[in-house]
Image (cartoon, rainbow, N blue to C red; front, side):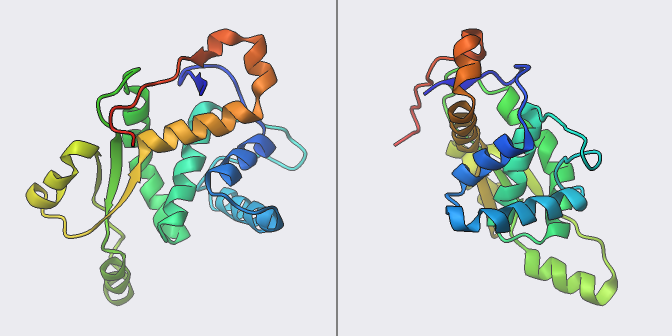
Length: 197
């Protein structure tokens, strides 16, 4: 598998990003229009970056692609748009740091976790106008048990950001093979994964 560098200048159109996210989530062709509607809603709610105006083209960076991928991971976990928007504010710096600082051959996958107390949060907001407060972090996969034992977390929603990065990379490479053939320096060698089964 080819890998894009995290700091590369390659950009993507909205159509290309949508195609990559569709691939990540195995969305069948007959549901593509429903997915595009979700993209528009996320853009309208400023959960993910979007076009600055009608008819104005925009190119998305690799960081935009990672942000889109995380927003849809949160959606897969069942978070409501208001929760996704808040989670994105706090999660993206952690996720970007985990991905951008990952070694060429990491010893362990990095997992993003968010405390799984959505019902409690929802009910508290309904009765006391309390603001949403999400406990989250990044942990190495081999140390995830410490999260529950030492951080006193009873339940958590987890996204393997290392795996997400690899899958997003593959989807984007598959979408832009000609650009990558013309610029082979944008590729990284295949990573060997000790933790991959």
